[in-house]
Amino acid sequence: MERNAVVCLAGTLDTKGTEYAYVRDCLLAAGVDVFVVDCGVLGEPVFEPDVDSAHVAEKAGIRLQDFQSGVEGAGGRVLAVTKMSEGLQKVLEELVELDRIDAVIGLGGTGGTDLLSGAFKNLGLGFPKLIVSTMASNNTRPYVGHSDMLMANAVTDIAGLNSISKQVLGNAANAAAGMAKGRAHIQTQAEASKPLIAVSMFGVTTPGVMRVRSRLESEGFEVVTFHAVGEGAGMEHLIDQGAIDGLIDFTLPEVLNHWNHGIFDPGCERMEAAVRTGIPQVVVPGAIECFNFGAVDTIPAEFNTPERNVLIHNPNITSLLATPEELGKLGEYVADHVNRAPGPKAVGLPLAGLDNYFKKGSQWHDVDVTPLFDSIRRDLDPDVELIEMQNNINDEEFADAIFDLFMKQWAARRQPTAAVE
Image (cartoon, rainbow, N blue to C red; front, side, top):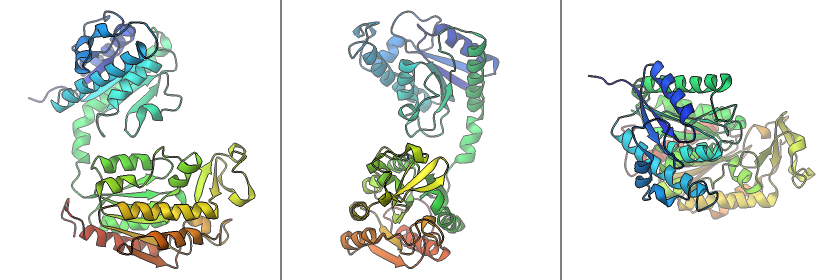
């Protein structure tokens, strides 16, 4: 007999028990079962959980008595958040492994969001996870990381029920219930049956990527594109997790954004995951010559100079040009990462333009990026196949050549993941 969908409700039932009780009742009204995990360390829970906080603490290798309740700093609150998050993660992983829950939801302020997010975001892509947080209207990257976790803005502080918080919490409960009910269907729809190829893309490299994507899909591959506005970090993470079978790293502005603290900084070194995993890859230095800030008046003075040739991409995004010295270093960076990658690999250079910024009539038409090409040619190991074409990166001829180059690397892979030949 098929069981009813189950939502796990996790969090501090001592300080926010009233709010958790309300969410529990909303979940039950939505037609799902509820499994409650308590993470509170300051007192007794407002209602009885299915898993108590002592068990969560035990999973982290500590006792509740080890906490200096109510004391701020490393010996008290910070320790409680860190260790209870570790314990909660282990509890949730066991519940998911045993197929006892279909979604998880929690509520938190700053500390609660830290506790919950540390556990939730590690549950894996596709498992429904939602936090109602007072931090959701701010920068959520520290909490979400590379996961698909959802965050709902609490609007009010999570400190008592009122006409506003009841609507926010009720909507969140219904969202979690809906995700739990639909999980089995979504899993069926998303079951991977084809090799998954990642391709990095920017607005100014989109035509080339779309051509490559179409060719790959016609050969039976599944293709996932990653917008190079910082999402390359998520791509690196998924490669490390083994979710990606092959890579066409077509677009690399995140490298210079990372060096110069641009708004599209991925927060990590790009191109490292292919070195760690050895998946088949083709690298194209698309848009590597640029980094980005917001509107013109947000550009730091040190970068708002004539040599940066500031280009207004749209009213809220500006693109800045690499210096000749940076171009040389970027070429060294690309060559070094390709050289160190243990899997099948190749490089393609579009000598007539790294993106649409180089098209005739554009502000960066005829910009000289020779230092980039020269350093790649000089530093790339001679056994790595290198193709150079007098094309813009978005020309169909170049995109087709990159597709052909990838197919050669795919054929040379060590351990085929599926029959695509």
